[in-house]
Length: 479
Image (cartoon, one colour):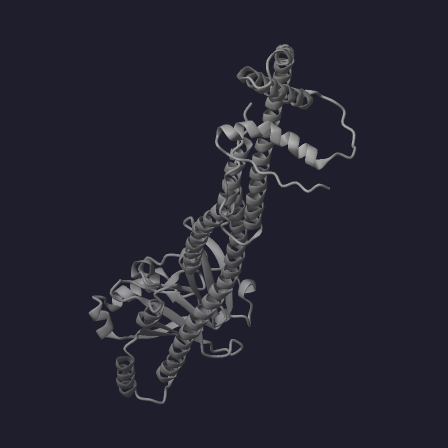
């Protein structure tokens, strides 16, 4: 089974990407958690502040309504004023307020009568009878008013005239005469408060959980109930007016704040979807993902570049090593840096130079060995030839010397025989010297006459030099 080969640059790239991915992931995860926690605290604080602001504004409105209702009630129960003056004054007060639609006085549980703003009713297309029919169908819970001292409920009859009913106890319950005043008031100002925030949904509820105000007037007219706002006294307490909570509504997650107004007569709630609240968190995460991706791409490109810079010289060294392995020592690697890899390239070049020099030396030694073997073979061949030639030369020399004895010394034949004798002796000396050279003998050191050695060497080459018209001159010292 063939093993999978991973290049070094891929290993470097994988290592760098793994390290950067781990670091970036840890940083992103930590930043996201910290930002999410900080954003969560901020959203809760903002929700609490928004709920508190809305609760205080609603409380101020209701307190103003309650105080004016007390003024109107004292005027109505004042028996010192003449009836005509009281009616005229009451009419002017209602016209100036522009919000009070009707006021009713209850003494000891009995209805003592009501005053109406006919103009407001007429503008909405309503009459006193319409208002009275609603009262008959939805009677005021006087005992609950007496227990709470302030009671608020949604009393909208028409979408053209959304109203609330506020009732308050004006006398001490311990007194025999108990006076409760109620007023039907336009919801315009509270509805305006509910529409102020473009980010938060604002709800104003009565003590029974029925909507008093919301940005969608249709829900107010239908007197819809809101289930996510807790109205338990324990949940909000007597002194703590604001509570924040997280809840699910219609498969969506919300962060909400709830406030209590005037002994639980009215509750105010605001909420914001978590998707909108944490929009910046998601944007941050998206940006972090983009930055992380950019870092990974940049790190990949940079690591590829540096891994190429690191591994390319190694690949060149590997390729050069293969050439050396095949016997090509005339190869060099150009150092690409001044680091350890550059020093390795310099050392490699020195090694190839030395190997090349040794190869040349080995080749020369082989040539010399071959030449020596040739010379040895030549010596053996020459010895055989010389041995065969020596015997005929001895015969020639002997016959020449015999002939010299029988001819006249002054004759031409004698001269020729002398040349034959001389040249034969010379051939004999050459052959004897050749036999001495070819003979494999153990050498021993002894003193020799250098001049004699020089004369013998000259005798071997003098004839050949003479043929080529070269004169050999000898200048040998006697000693």
